[in-house]
Image 1 (cartoon, one colour):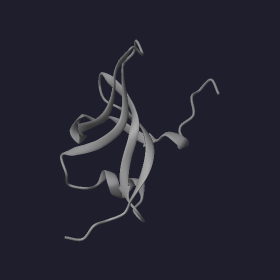
Image 2: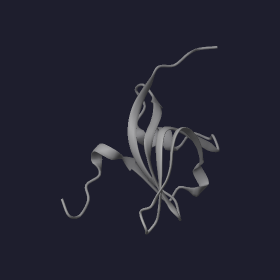
Image 3: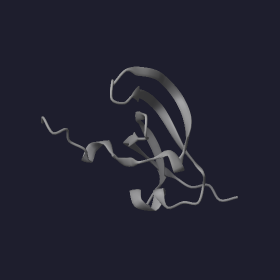
Image 4: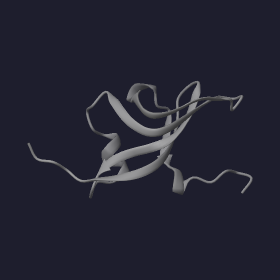
Length: 86
């Protein structure tokens, strides 16, 4: 089995009820959009922090979680996001 190298990308992910901040692992050389088009049902997220929406209450900090891609409403690399007030 061929082993791939992965890049760690900090990401912000929104579902209907939660905001997640964590690290996704993208195969080296792939674009972020390529990562989203993989046919796997779950996206592994490491060093994840989970907040409620809209209260912004911290629920969990975990080393790993599997996120069902069907629950994702918005996802973007954290370094490309900017809050309106900034």
